[in-house]
Structures are given as structure tokens and as C-alpha cells.
Amino acid sequence: MNKYIKHLLLLSFAISFFAFGWMSRTSYSSVHTTKTYLDTIKRKKQLNVVLLNAPSAYYIGTDGPQGFEYDLLNAYAQHLGVDLNITTANTIKEAIELSKNPNIHITSAALAKTKEREKTFNFGPSYFEVQEQVICNRGMLGKNNFPRDIESLASLRISVGDDTSYSETIHSLQSQGYDINVTFTSEYSTEELLAQVATNEIDCTIADSNIYALNLRYYPEIVSAFTISEREQLAWVLAPDSKELAADMYAWFNGFNQDGSMAQLKDHYYSDMQFFDYYDTTVFYKRIEVRLPKYQHLFVEAGEKHSLPWTLLAAISYQESYWNPNSISFTGVKGLMMLTLQTAKILEIENRTDPKQSILGGTRHLKKMLELLPKEVEGENRLKFALAAYNIGLGHVTDAQALAKRLGLNENIWTDLKRALPLLSKKKYNQTLKYGYARGEEPVKYVDSIYVLKDILENHIEDKKIENNSTLEKIH
Image (cartoon, rainbow, N blue to C red; front, side, top):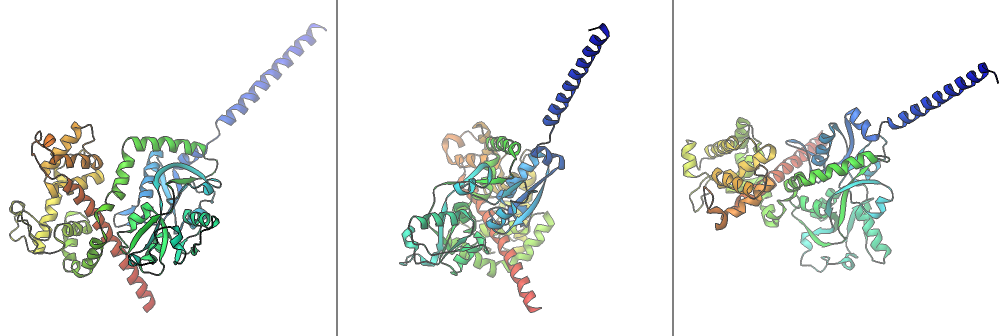
């Protein structure tokens, strides 16, 4: 082989080796720069979600979108730096159908992570624990047909949503030989079925414990008969092939739990459930119809003047006086907003029993509490702190903040302050504080109760609007 041919072969080999290396590198780079599912969401700056339109998940309130599931999803969207693009579903079955749309990233419908569903759906991390409960009409209490166990369901009118965890439970029990006469419906949501139980259209339905707790305030005629399932975990349904999204979500949920944000969210929606019983709720509904109309225009006027929801002011007034302008306590506080004589003097109120003076004075007093709180108390926490100060005095709230900080709690969030407030009644703690003893349990119950009253009132107003619109449509 002469020297020329030898050089040619070496050159050919070098070129081939270079080409192979370049192609391999290109192939490797192509694989490792492929956009993931999560990358696509961030690039488009949009998280497409299906949300169940229900009190437990998502609805439009007087202050805009709200609901436990909505707030949770919105917090996650903020973490990703994207906007929420919401598609609403009216039933769980509808939500599940919508989840199959290839453009949907997350489906949030308070869905239990059941064994059957896990065979079909890609679930994200669990975020709430519930149990299924048999919910019946309160009028059945004390009668022979009120169910106490599964066997006693046989002769009752029961309806549950189709394609729900409740229908799975019923099918499982029927396969075990239990005689349960159930109608499965895709027409009505769980909340609508609870309404049917309240009006005695059906005897019973099944609902998760959190859904029952939320709806009890709207339907005082319903009552839990017994628990029919083991503990179940709620989770979001994720699109297939979204491993990176799931991994990011697990990490985010971990941080959301550890920094106390999840506790705050659960506290906001569920902490007040124990403060209202059947009698309290039914009486409140009656007084909305009979007493509130006399003073509603004054609450609206005061709310507009001081940029506060009138429903909040009405809730405070009901908690204080049951909307009785002549109300007076043994300590001498008077009127619709139950103002002390000292507060009335500061606010230059001449007649505490005059409805207009009392409402405007109470509103100004609440506004002052909001202004005097430390700037570190932010968002919804600020309103809850102000309500606590309205009830117990700003000095005691400041003491509770100092005590919370001393105990290693966050003195600027309500979930931690409500742990410190009850300690104000204990000598061990109050003797070291500036303002001393206080019945610290009271403002905790006070704030939670006002939020329940406000929620019931706003829900009632919305129902009336729908009812009136429906009546007008029939007339025309």
C-alpha cells in the first residue's frame, strides 16, 4: 500500500469517526432538551384545571372565586408562576369525563383515591382525609326507620351520585349480599342530593365528612346517621405521562404542609363547624327573613362607606345582638353592635340603641382595629385579628401575639394566634403579660362563628337571587 492510499484511508476513518461523534451528540442533546409536561405548562403560563362547582371545591362568592380546592390549586399555580384556566363541572361524573380531555392538566373535585379509581386514573399526592357518611333527614330521628347500620338501609329511599366513591361503596356492599335499595344518578350533585334529603324528597344519601360538615350550615334538616367507609384520601387527578408535574407537586405539598399554609387553609374552611347546632341555624334563617330587612340598608351603607362587606357587618351584629337594637348585656354594652360606653364616647356616638349610630359606630371601630394592627399581619389574617380585637380588645390580642412568639409560634397568622389566645386565661401565662387575664377562648369562637354566619347569609342571598330569576323567567 503506497503512502498516498494510506493517508487517504486514515483521513476517511477520521471523518467517519467525527461524523459518528457529531450524530451521537446531536441525538443525545435532542433527547435531553425535550420539553417535559411541566415545562410546557410553565412555558404557556397556564394551568388547565377542572374544578367541581360546589361549596367544598369552587364557587363564586361575594368576594370572588373561593372554595378549599380552588384556594389550594391557586396556591400551587402561584408556585408555578402560571395562571389558572378553570373548566367547571357540576357533578363528579362530569368532572371525571372532562378529565379525559388531553388539554386538562389537573382535575380537582374532592375525589377520593379509591382502589377502583387508581386502576384508571393517575392521582397526585393526598391532601385531605375523609370518611363517607350516610346522611338522612333529621325528621327520621326517633322513628323506627332511622338507620343505625347498613342492614337498616334496606327499606329507605336512597340516592347517590353515579361514578362516585359512594356508588363504589354501595356496589361493594351489594356484592357482599347487603339489600340496599339505591338510585344512582348522574343528574344531581352531592350537594343537590343533600338538599333533597333536607326537603324529604329522599330519605338518605352518602357524602364525605367534609362535604357534610360544610353543607350542614345550609341544610340544618340533615343529620349524619353513621359512617359507612374506612378513612379515604382525597387527591387531584393528573394527566397521564405527567411524572415531572407529580414530582413537583409532591415537593410543593410537603413545603405547603411544613410552613403551616395547609393548616391555615383547613382552619379557614373547616374550623368553625362545631359552633353551630340545629337550633342555632334554623333560628338564624328565620331572623334573616324577619329581622334583617329592617337594617340591611344600614349595613350596606356602612360597608360602602368603609370598604367592608356588608354581610360581614351583619354577621358581627347578629353575633353581638341577634339583630336586636335594644339588646343590653350585664356588663352594660348596648345596641345592634353591642358597643361599650367608653367606645361610644371615643366614636362620639350619642345613642347606642339607635340602629344607624350603632352600625356606623361598630363599623368605624372595626376599621380602627384593622388600621392599628402591625403591618406584618396580612391578608385574611388581618381581618380575623381585627375581629378578635373587636371582641376582646386590641391589648389582649397584642398580648397573645407576644405569647405566641414566646412559644415559638408565628404571631402574625390566625392559626397560631388562636392557639395562644386561650392561654390568656391561665395564670401561668397572663401574669407575665401587660394586660393580664382574659377569657381567650371567646375571641376564637367569636371569629369562627362570624365566618359561619357570613357564609350562611351570602349563600342564602345567592339562593334568593336564583329563585327570583327563575320566577321572572316563568312569568315571561
